[in-house]
Figure 1 (cartoon, rainbow, N blue to C red):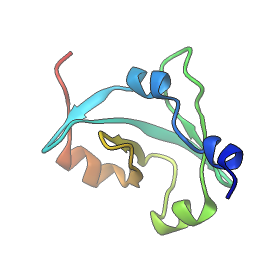
Figure 2 (spheres, one colour):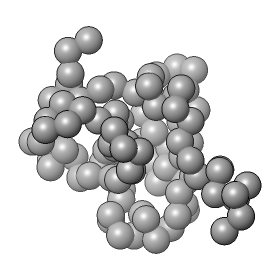
Figure 3 (spheres, helix red, strand yellow):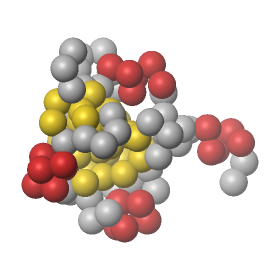
Figure 4 (cartoon, rainbow, N blue to C red):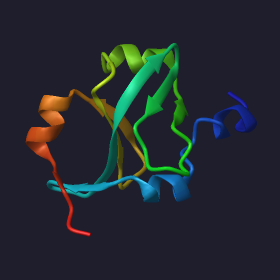
Length: 96
């Protein structure tokens, strides 16, 4: 994959920083997924943040992603989706 094509899938760090922080063993940034359309996730994010995240269809299939799940970005940049009951059991909102 070319660097230009790969760059479109890298997270915008300024926008990730605006997502709510959660804590468990390690802090993460996360938000609920409002809609899944093809290989695009529409996130429930604060105003001013692009709600659309392009990803790979294989990523969505692997994680069985659906609306209501959480899109999670770990401190090392790894991204995943977690089903809401699991995420809500593992993570609590971090103090501001």
